[in-house]
Length: 472
Image 1 (cartoon, rainbow, N blue to C red):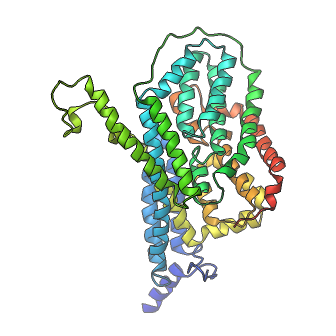
Image 2: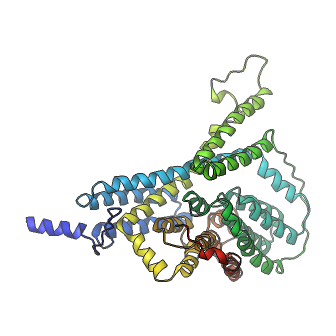
Image 3: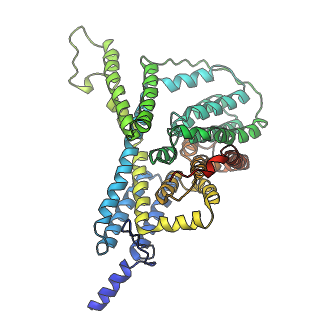
């Protein structure tokens, strides 16, 4: 009986390929039962994420559950090999997540604050009330999506511009579909040349693979990625001029100053990273402090019209209805933030079993850096680009600076190939339900694919000298 148990234990814990990483203490457990169960757990969880719209299960729930299961399996697999490794490994992943969480929490809070002050609604109403032709609206919304997404996230930008498209397009479904595709491509392309435009670019920046200034090397490739499909679709849109709408929305008191504080926060985060060598998340939290003090002033101002001449009572948050910073924090996309936790912990856990080393050798050694990075963009159209990029960063393949910029570009814009390939596309499918659909996006995918190929070619030409620079 004892020999049977011993043999069972060996099958559970012995690696399929006994290559031990001396520096990290990791062992290749890709062929062990624990490793196989972990991989199946992640695939099952991600299948539920993909079916979120159909089964109405929030995407964070399956990946958070899978993350816990995977790390239990890691602890069991390493308990007789290197029992200290799981604790050190999970703490490293937690630090990475905490930096991402604090960064995004501040950015989302600012976006919510600007939304509450009617900043985005005022922009939308101004555009709708101008009486532009459909073709002009097509170009304006696409251009604004490209220009706004480097500061706001691509999903918020897509929803804002999508609202303009639907308000102007009305029953003209052909225009709405093409304009929505243009907005998605523009938002994803704009987010690719800024650390603030997409989660993947933020992760690359925080990991130190690309500096803040170096992201602007991707400006022209990103612009080409948007312009090529936009020029193709431009000739399919009529010059019809819909009737102007008379909606009028003004920015509430303090809205413009919140925009200014957000700009200051971005400068602070960049300065923390570039000049003080501190995490950008710490700079963003300082920026949240800016908004915290300004929110106190706003709250007093908003309550001034409803208060009596008596002393101001600030003891209860529920007694007044002015600007409340903590309500803006409550309105952050917690499902998204928890989804990021689950993804980082799942992918990091699979890395401890050796799957990422195997994938790195298969992709970057077998296919070469260029082909692998192009494939990353195509994969991000099917699978969310966040786990794909986190996996690449965790693999940390030896690549030139030009290759790191290339994978940053492809992971950012590759999601535009399909409507489900990016948060911007999924969000617009929800707001334009029944009009902008997966199938209708697929009709124009060849134009988007041409933009994808053209952006890669542009990068290879204008940044050719960067492919000879190795930083890591």
